[in-house]
Length: 251
Image (cartoon, rainbow, N blue to C red; front, side, top):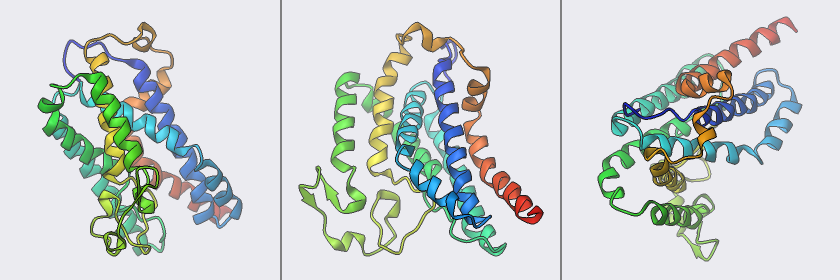
């Protein structure tokens, strides 16, 4: 963070809570994948209904923090490199060990890394706009593009041509064929607009005008998890897999 800025502990705590929810969600998937228990898939699918809420909060907070970062582009490159490690492990190493179906080609870390780098490069331009107008436009653009995976824009009023979805080369943007699979998938469109929304409302954090309770620490545990969310995300899946494999051996 930029020096001399008060730390907003509640953002760390919300991010920490979101990461814990993600770990719980992925654990049920591993119950199905590794232990072969069908109820793991059922719980995982049921939780998919609320999953976007936690990830939206996570992305918004990342957008807010990008406004407080000393070097958003560099931070984005580090996060994108973390995403590349996830792809290497899940799409190359794990299949060699006999685990398939968990490949991640463009997950949350890839998306956040790209969003940080784009926002960092455009930050001088974005800061010229009124933050309230920027936040409103960002939200409208997210709603406009949120149906891109289903080939629809503007709440279904615009149908995109099938040719855009014939290849997987542009899966990072949200265009992919029916053969594309990524266990964790967050395309740049529409999620970049959620990130930019966070950047704009981050003006309140930059000016230290957020409600006073947000600067107070309510949970040391959640705060610590939130501050180390990148490393926890990188480590959680291998750890869960090892635990599940040990359980499968024991039973």
